[in-house]
Length: 146
Ligand code: FES
Image (cartoon, rainbow, N blue to C red):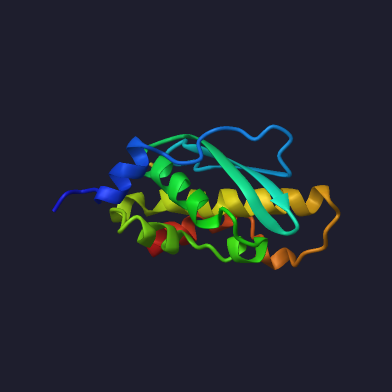
């Protein structure tokens, strides 16, 4: 079996929603200290809906494919739904990632959360802090889950 699914190869070769949104309503940037990869997500939010989303990922192919798929999954969706997006859902939508690449999909989940938190912070919107755990604390946990 090939190491990467056709979907991973497709989203890596033709990533959707690459770029930057000028004057984005929320921006999230996260990195993985172990591999050094960085992912940045930009959100345009209208009436609680993700009207547009773009990403810039300086990282491996799986991170690029995960960003692309994650942005497709949240585009046009309410923020509440985007907050529920898990790295597992991203990996499943890609028809799986190799175990040692699952952390790449974690970056996508974290970057989206971070961008939504940024939007809440900028607009003085109250939120439950428990919904936004510090990614640094979660790192080891996610690695063990692999
Ligand atoms: Fe670290 Fe892919 S190897 S994000």
